[in-house]
Image 1 (cartoon, helix red, strand yellow):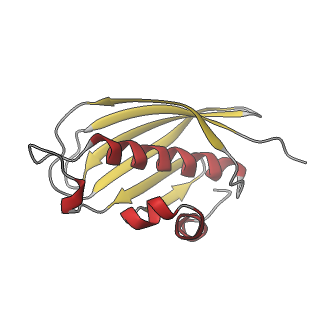
Image 2: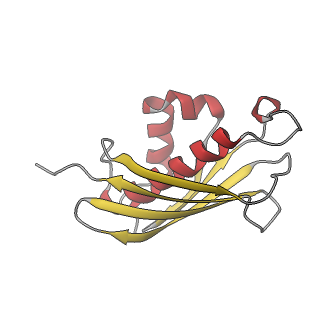
Amino acid sequence: MSEITVQRFNEIIRDELPWAHELGMTADSISHGEAVLRLPFGGKMTRPGGTIAGPFMMALADGAMYAVALSLIGDVQMAVTTSFNINFLYRPVPADLLAEGRVLKAGKRLVVVDVHVHSEGHDEPVAHATGTYSIPPRP
């Protein structure tokens, strides 16, 4: 069972992450060690050539990593990204982006997460990201 609900995570986005809220980022599902986040497609997301700009995919992947970390530790908002790596694989189509994250390893201080980003309706990933979240010490 997840340590945080979809509803609570979406409240965190709305109340504590204004940049993510303004983009329309939301959690579709969260379970223990897994999360799926959505970023609705919008015309302002494109770069020259008509493709979705990389920073949007990066933001979504990092949001998914945060959701996965909180699914394990609960509402610990000071968990922070300590490393992030992304590979852009294919050109995304003009559709909502989905980021599917899952824990690779969880320790007392670090959570390592794997994320696949894909365009809704397409199975092949447009980006693959890995990252590590640092968990603050508990009182």
